[in-house]
Image (cartoon, rainbow, N blue to C red; front, side, top):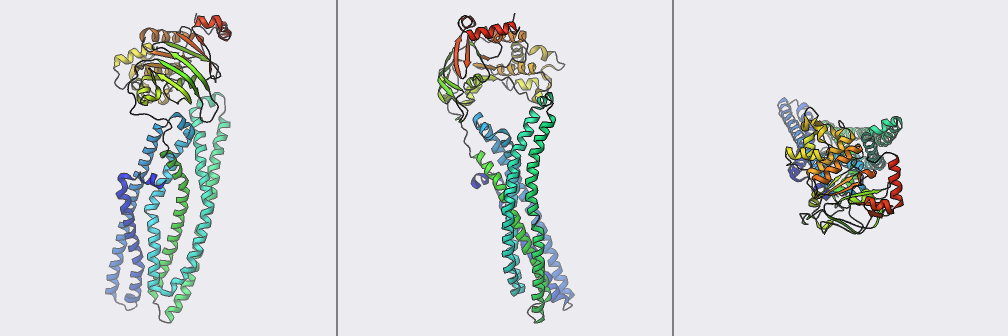
Length: 575
């Protein structure tokens, strides 16, 4: 795990290396100052040698300025290294997620991946900064201060032989309690982010069903879980300060008593005793800081594990970058294909299907019959569990994933538009598309009339998610975007559900007449959308129940006939 994370320091390695050196310089100067103060008291003030006082005073000022300079330089280099380290981790995480298959994303969940890229990365960034600063500064301070106490006080160093084990045990007990609380709090961020994401994405549904109070309750519950765990951890950590003050005062009393006796018998001078008071604070504060760092690193350990888990996860789908780079034609064949999501039962079973290049194929079936799962295998959004999916005469796994998906355009019922202009959104399908190609694609998708009626036409602004367009307009723009890819296969998964039947018929007519070489696979709940298809596939419970033209199915299949008559009576078919 550490190897995985530390390899992301990369170009910031030099800043991470020089930070500990600055810390050593800062501590050395800081530890030197009490001894210089002792010299002023014992050799300058006592003897009234003002020249000596002035010289040592200059040395103290110089040591203080050097300590300040080293500290500032260390803070700068540590910030540079930790911020760059976090940037590299975040970039590598995002790159790895972009390589994930749909199944990989399903396994981690979107909310968990967001937490890992935000809260977890922030925790690791802070921990890394502590590692290269405080983890060096505190132990060095402890060692140097102990040496100076032994040098100046001799026997007084025995006080710390009792105090240090007491502090160490207390820190350990506090650490053990706080680690559990903070780890639970950070895991709670997954739930918190999921609740926020679901409610913001579905805010219209929440308002339409007047569920604001219920969803606010879920938010407050997730927030309260985080608050409760943080409060528990911080309450325990709050014991650290009074504990350290108690130990410090006990040490001061013991040092004062023993030091006074040593001064009386001439084995110690007043200035040396004063310096030991300062070193006592440095020793105990360094122990506290070391304990705090250990606690914070332990808390961040969970974040490190979660980040490393993503970075070390090999994408479940082989992208086959050296595979075939071109799809010869738009033919599609399923050979004994079965498929299931993860360990769940199969949603497709023994599918045999053949689609000729250039055909228009309709797929119908009840909700949960496997329609979307079936077309997902063509573009390798998922891989078949058993059997083979053949596109253009080759198994889809033989193609470079990039090449395959460039030739298979999928338009979903709910598609996403991005902030920008209409033209910029359409060029997602083809960055080099000309204005005429954009207009042609919009004409086929029946999007040209409403786009060209806007004051700025194809330069009209699109809000994030396309919220300034209706559902039907977004669907038509997404169809146009897919057509601009000039794919071999166009898959429309209920992507005209939000348009009226006349517009739907217009789109189908344009697809048949203007893009004849394109294989068109249409999933729809409306028979009017697939009646004129070359073949209609009826799916039932993950199996092909029947296949044929509209007339053939109407003549022989009672279920199809019932559906046709129901929709005819309901007025859902075109006249």
